[in-house]
Length: 110
Length: 114
Image: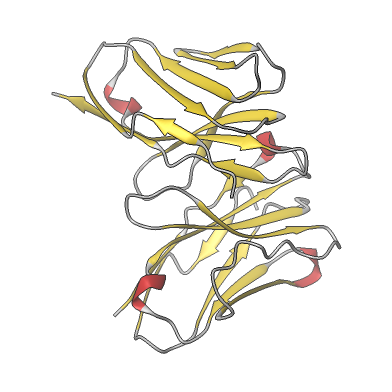
């Protein structure tokens, strides 16, 4: 079935560092979404992207919808402790089904 | 309600027993989804309800799994004859329609089969 390749699987960074993660697919998506999941909670939507080439920011978060519609990246600038969690990319197909990546686990070193 | 409510939040059951997991979506949301998340893994699609349309059951892993949505609101996911590999967090999400941006997740039910 259709899959999203999300990388890296996990990251260990120092507080204050910038973070970058991405998703790629062999198929085209109409919408790219980025979610964050805190322990014991469901994922929460961070950013939604609707047009190829679109670059969207939400505070310290920046995400882009790849021009080929097959990839997306998420950047977090100046990381803080509350950024810890699992970040999921998701692509929405023309039939509206949403496919999730396997997640990037962000750890911040003390 | 203000958010998607799932119950119970935790369930421990013996292998072979049936379990029912409940999801109360946000009022007015016509679309409802069930996902499964195994420890350290991503989100595995199970089933999707949209209004009065026939549900998309393509993600259900076996015929031991079934789900229904009564009156276009509350949904119940039933797992019959539970197995240890069914242990996971079961997440429900709802949205106003087909828009992915409108997905709101519940906090999940953590199922442990012993």
